[in-house]
Length: 427
Ligand code: HEM
Image (cartoon, rainbow, N blue to C red; front, side, top):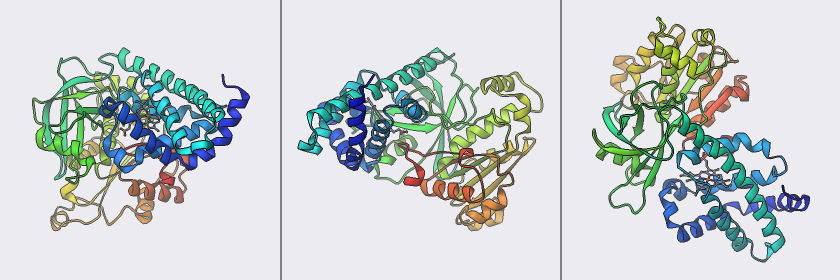
């Protein structure tokens, strides 16, 4: 329990530290990695290079400091980060290391302004915040380990199928190398893939959304090829070019809280841009699995996993909206059409930014240009629906703004940003 004095010092100095936040966290990471180079096997170097991780960590520490006397307010944000930590095998013993270097960086950047009293107050506050994370993560590790087929940390998986879904997106079907059953997961969750790439000093981790429903013998991830020399493209391009059937990868159990809320008896809109289609595929296929014409045991399993009422699922209309540059890079076209056709109450809308001449011949799309306000207002029939959005930041930003303009309530809009969590409106 923090003393009133400590709370006052932390709250009154939080704005000053926030102002220097990015400088402090940059200094923190530099010092952290020079004294603990082994941690470079956990962190994503692409996010580091862009300064995104610095911003995410700085935002969280100062938000936590602001709410230091009412930590329960932070729990939803802590849970989202804890999912990421759990999927990267972050451990309780890492917290004191991070704490030591964070305080060291505060001292280094603020100089004389960081008095002993201030540093001690922040050390105490960090301890309290870290304990909240450790406790939430402990529960998540237990949950991941205790469920049927579950495991802790990384486990070896074999690539059993590789399928080109478009000119730039390829799916990898992954099976546990020990042939054990897979755990259940919620539609929208992701896994972390860990790879050793020749010429790289450290292991590289990346998160990929699962792109099919649970209940199969494999996990499916669908990876976009990125532009060559960016750090972001290192792993995805390596997967495309060098990982083939029979190769092994290390994988963590599914995590993430951007998931379809099947308990709500409301229409569902799944809106994606580009490779943001991957979690939407899992959501669509899960709804499809819960609405079969005959009630198979698999459908019942999915429904009980989602803890939902059968009637709510059967009656929820689904609208699948996808924006792609053109037909060449549009993944899962046929799979979506087929799934939608077999659903009782579903429709789809594909919008191509720059259709090719072949797209005009095939008539595979419904709208041309961007998914703008006009298009959305013609697509959205039920404003009280639940909206799930995933895609490039600018796409999500525009879509969220347009949905709000259409009168959709903020709490009915859910989105996932690839990379460190940031507030979309501040991005
Ligand atoms: C990610 C905060 C402790 C390792 C993040 C993110 C935030 C954050 C906000 C971004 C979440 C997202 O991507 O959705 C914090 C806070 C901590 C803390 C407030 C202390 C109280 C730790 C510790 C470790 C760690 C002890 C382990 C050494 C990571 C890694 C990522 C991450 C590896 C993913 C970064 C990436 O690869 O892009 N953390 N963290 N964090 N955190 Fe922490």
